[in-house]
Length: 387
Ligand code: NZQ
Ligand code: ZN
Image 1 (cartoon, protein in one colour):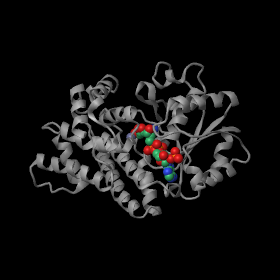
Image 2 (cartoon, protein in one colour):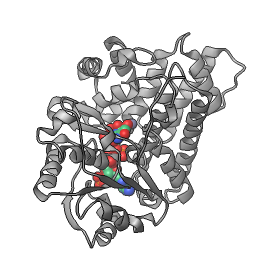
Image 3 (tube, rainbow, N blue to C red):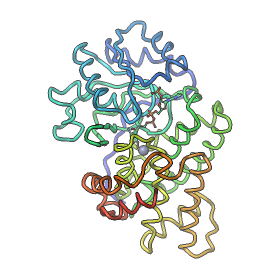
Image 4 (tube, rainbow, N blue to C red):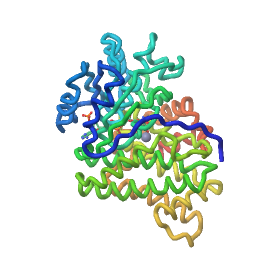
C-alpha cells in the first residue's frame, strides 16, 4: 500500500429541498456573488428563478452561456473580468461540471494579476482563489467534490486538467430532483464518465481489497441506477444514488493507497473533445473497451478477471483470457445498451487527425507512466480501433 496525504474540505449538502440553506451558507463568504450558469437549462427548469429569490439579500452579478467543455475564451476571461471589476466575494456555480469547472478557473484567475492561462498550465502557482459554492444540476464529473477543473482552448486544441487545493468548492448543494430534466443522452454520458472514473482507479498495479470493493460497488450501482433512470427519469431513489456515486468519482477517495494509474482514458479523451468538442462521457465510453483490449496481456489479465467476475458476474470457471475478453465485451455492450454511439465516426470524428491527436496526447498526458504504459503508437492504435 502506498503512502498518501488526503483532504477533501468540501461540505456536501444533499437531498431534496436543501437549497433552502443557500443564503446561510453564502452569507459568511461575502455579499457580492458571481452567479455562473450554462446555456439556459436552469431557466427552463425554474431553478434560476428559485436561486435569484434566495439571493435577494446579496448583490448578484451574472455570467451565463458557459458551454460544455468550457472555454477559456470567452468564459474564463469574462468571468475573471467580472470578478475584478465588481470586487466579487464568492462564486455560485449552478449547472453541470462545465459550469463548475469554468467557475474554478475564474475563482483562481480573480486572485491573480497575470494571464489566468499561466495558472491553468502551472506556469504560475495558484496561491489563492475566491470561494466557490455550487448547485449541481447534472451528475457526472464529481467536480462538486474535487479540486479539478478542465478548461478548453479552442484555438490551440488544448483541453487541460487544472488541479489545485484552492479549487475545492466550499459547499456543494446536491438535490437529485434538479437532475430529473437531464436528457437520456446526457444521463448515459454521465454514467459513462463516472464509470470510467472508477475504472481508471481500479486498473492499477497496487490496489487494496477495500478500494476494489468500493469501485466494484460503484460500477454496479451506476449501471443498475442508469437503467432505472432511463426508464423513469423522475425516480428519486435512482437519481439520488446515481448522484452520490458520481460525486465520489474524482477526489481520490476510491484509490487511497493505490499506486497511480495515469488515468489513460481521460488523457486520450481530452484530445478528442479538444479537437472535436464532443461530449466527454461519450468519448470515454467509445475509448474504454478499445483501451481495455489494447492493454490486455499476461500482466494485466488478473485485473480484468476480477473486474469481470465481481462487476458483471462472469463465470470464474473459465480460461482467464476468456473471462477478460467477456468482461471487455460486457463493458462495450452496457454502454451500447444505454444508447451511447459506440464509435468515433458516429460522433463526427474520422481518421484525418488521429496521428496529430495521438502526438498531442503523447506529448502532454504522460501516459508512458500509466498502469499499462502507452506510447504514441499505442494511443494512435487505440484511436484507430475506436473509429
Ligand atoms: O448549459 P446548460 O443549458 O445548463 O445545459 C447542459 C449542457 O448542455 C445540460 N444540463 C445540465 N444540467 C441539466 C442539463 N439539461 C437539462 N437538465 C439539467 N438539469 O447538460 C449539458 C452538459 O453539461 P456539462 O456541464 O457539460 O456536463 P458534465 O457535467 O458532464 O461536464 C462535462 C465537463 O466536465 C469535465 C469534462 O471534461 C467536460 O468538460 N470533467 C470535469 C472533471 C472534474 N472537474 O473533476 C472530471 C471529468 O473527468 C471531466 O473531465
Ligand atoms: Zn471524466
